[in-house]
Image 1 (cartoon, rainbow, N blue to C red):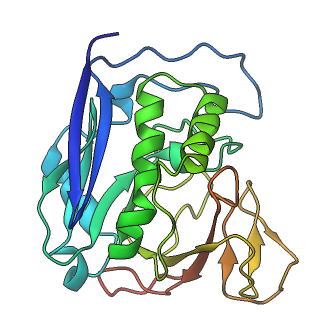
Image 2 (cartoon, rainbow, N blue to C red):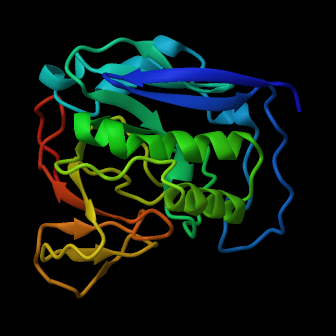
Length: 250
């Protein structure tokens, strides 16, 4: 593995140092499983978007233009996430990859995943660093278990910021690709709360099915985070409209 490259990404008054690595690593060999279509990480270039301007534009589709046009944009390069466009409203837009799924998701390594998200300022400061840390560890060749343990240790040591009140994000891109399942996308908002928060939501399990928690509720509790290991609940609220204003028929 080649030498480390240190990059600093700044969000207003918050700077995050990304330790990234100079070589695209080879996929890890794992046993094939009929229920796991992506048993290991693909070659890194399958997760990258060759044209930076294309990734910037895709990231901005996560939120209405009134928000995204003045947001900072970060893109994934071969050495980690880096700033591609400066912002002036405190929002940060990014195209996340499948490794931000729950750790038990069968699509955790799906190289087709493209998840445009725009974080508001509190979430950019306190939730987005989780994305950067996971990505840093993935590019360093860590296994899922090693990633989880590293994040858990960082939380215990206060090396990651505490969740700020009011953190939320926009995920309203009609151009997103979230899963291989049919009807793979839905325009929605996401709200981040401490564990134990009760909002009267349905619960989405790892296969994206709904359980009978609060039937009929339009609010969903996503499987991401939920203390595994990040001490966060993430609630989803469908918007019924894409970021460009056109209807999203659910």
